[in-house]
Length: 207
Image: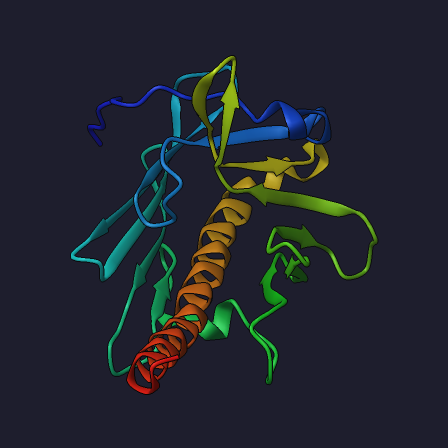
């Protein structure tokens, strides 16, 4: 595969750097779950490539290895395909509860893992049989430092003892964060429509 390096990494936000200490940090070139490159902190070499064509087909590569292909459908369920396996419905691999969007669970190596969402909308990965966090995702952050606007990169933090699951952690995180953002967009639409309707009504009655 031939990939060109065009972007320069920004550092981890100092306000959360302490929480990331001791973790393996994968920085995102762009805070985009469908088109980006991930690199290890302090190592400029690309590690993961995420590319989407026509907003319908996304491939996730770890170096030159294809990890997964995701196909977005309009009238049918989205599908995911792993190398050497048949396509399956995305919802059958990354499963949500009956009446909720989270936690999202998947199986790997015969064990179940969960991406959970906290009250500020940050995702973290857990083994339900243990209390500790395996991995977590941080969105990009905008700050003003020394009078200048700085954008700190989005990143995935992985505890070293779970690094052997890095590929599936990255793949599942991309999908879970994308779902979280799409849910946020959809929930914002009715609120925006309601605000517009209220403004129109107020104008009509002269209030």
